[in-house]
Length: 410
Image 1: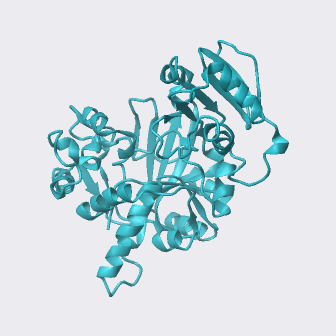
Image 2: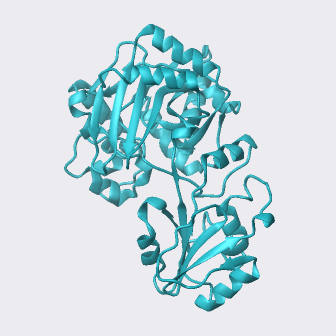
Image 3: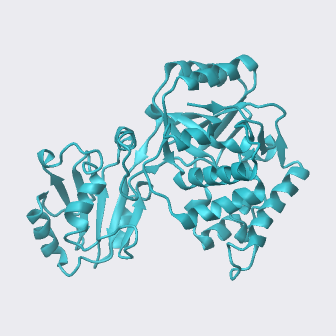
């Protein structure tokens, strides 16, 4: 696969901690506006430019995207952002709750995405793509890195270990307790070694950022169509990414809450679970966080029950064997009436970082919550290798990459 160094637009070291922002899509509109209040340097001002307008402003109007471009130009002019003079790689380490993961910031090939060398496991929505395409086109830049995983490589581990012994470019702890450290790799022999080693890696997997990737690729294809002289080396032919060895990544559970029991009540739901082949444990007050695949915690009627599926009944299909699929196919669909979890307003999804207290709060007295075991990175790669798609909301990655630390001008 191709993972190239690039000429980066990045914040000056003195303001990097103020610029770095969580991804644009973790906020709704009101949350985004609250998050930028009193934080003029937060990159979220640029990623979500509707925050600069009254609440009744059409957030997809041309003037909104133009505002994002204006803010970036202003911050380049006043020294908030600087531009490195030569193509470089960057190493980006995130440390959270005692765990570290170190990725290589690079630009990956649009052609590798198109031909399946960069593998995905989720569908994307046209409306969400359109927003980011317009954002990229207005700024003439990609601002949100795609979170990619590759199968562990000893050769890259050795290079990264040597490079991270140097003085970092940035090193700060964010408000949520995640420590972010960045090193620049500009020495020609190190740059050549990283690029050559990636050429020997067969593929990468999108862990997070399917919409950002699809948008960057479609914006690139539009530029190709407008440039008959395209030769493939133009900056728009690659997209901003951070590539992590799969063995360093942690996936948290993505839990489910249904607003009601579909008329069954607590006792009726327990009986229905047994009828569809789920073993049901006794009621208990203490929350149940499943210790392994094929087990679920169910909170209903003020009590928790452990559910378990017979492993022999699961099969080996990489999608059907996922806990999210088992729950949907056996219980959420046929029993609770959630035919399409993408669109049904009765179901909501809660990232595992929120904890079981949040599940109990959302379920309340009338609903039901399900705690799942986390999907593994091996399961994610198996689904992508098979060219299949995961159920919606199957993986929750933490910690989140920050936006604004790396910008790729196209």
